[in-house]
Image (cartoon, rainbow, N blue to C red; front, top):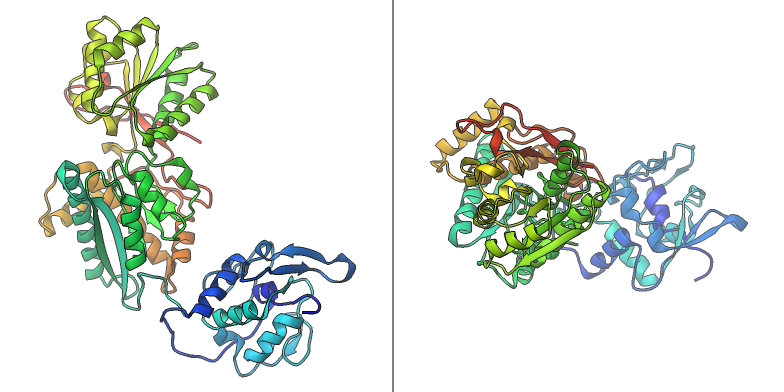
Length: 530
């Protein structure tokens, strides 16, 4: 093929042509259209694609991946402003409009048909022979890749994302199937479904009903990734909201990665930091690592500790590897020394031995990743030995019992981090949640699960409304990235950006010793982390 082809990004940045108006076709893509979609969004085809930027001796050769159609023209082909350039509409109904086109710089040409579109991709000439914008890249690609790209370009803007129809938006959640955690999962599913009923009764989202699909994972499902992958392959939802996947976070998030399915809301405490780079995942609350990071920052600035000796006690499980690394990094940033690791077998914590070992080592600060009974046993064993180091722990992981009964020596020396507290709860939001629970005859137990589910759905519904009728996964994601101090009524204000995926970055730090007659202080300090 002679000369550079002016196709791929020239289309991606320069085609102007309105179109034949045809009804939306939401059927599945053909094999050729699927290949064209890959080219459109990745710049990779069946054979190498080469981009050329500029003309003459100043022309720059680049791989096709360096200038991708979808990055400029978006999922729907209508264009996204970038670096002062506003890419044009490249939907087929626009390209093929019968009365042709007049570009901003005065260039006129007839409308495109399939043949002239192929010619433009190869030569950079508009229909009628006028040259296209010389500032746009040109591309060289095989005949098959070119045909596939044209096939897909005729469908851009006409295809609805999975889980989306003209009348419904199907949303999924993932919860445990059985046991005590299954009860929490049932609460989450019930609250989401009840909230959806409220939205649907008010007309839905631009005429579309919200439909919930609850996926249940067996207890400690060792094949969680495979199970979730099968669900996604068989009938994927448009998005997930408030998934609750204790002990299988890593597997579930691995299965979701790369599927471009928006996920709104917390998983559990063990959210994996490596998944924060997934632009489709939005956490309302900080994960366990960030809560402990806030605790380290609090201890360094409020407790006036000078070069403390540190230790972390934790169940020996993979999900905590990233968490401990975050704690170590946070300590180094505060100028603290080495963190001593004290793992114990899952479900078999010897509190007496652990307390004696750390006391003998002269530890000043203990960071606990154990659950309530493990932390309580450790505090009791330490108090019996007359040893009372500062102890930092997640309040959600440690349970509520320690707030009601803490060994006296640790009243002012136990510091618990919480992603949300009652002081966040606005009267109007409490009223709304109470109404939802009453109308749907739902029990009022598991308050934190109810708050998480309600808040996650509130964020989802707001983002869906902002995205408008032209809804797609990318549009939903873009709207979520624009959230700034959004008030759910039950949580700290939520802010997301293109590189921030935790809505409330930080934690409240509460000392049980500050609780008087069962009442929390009027204001508990919020520790913001970067």
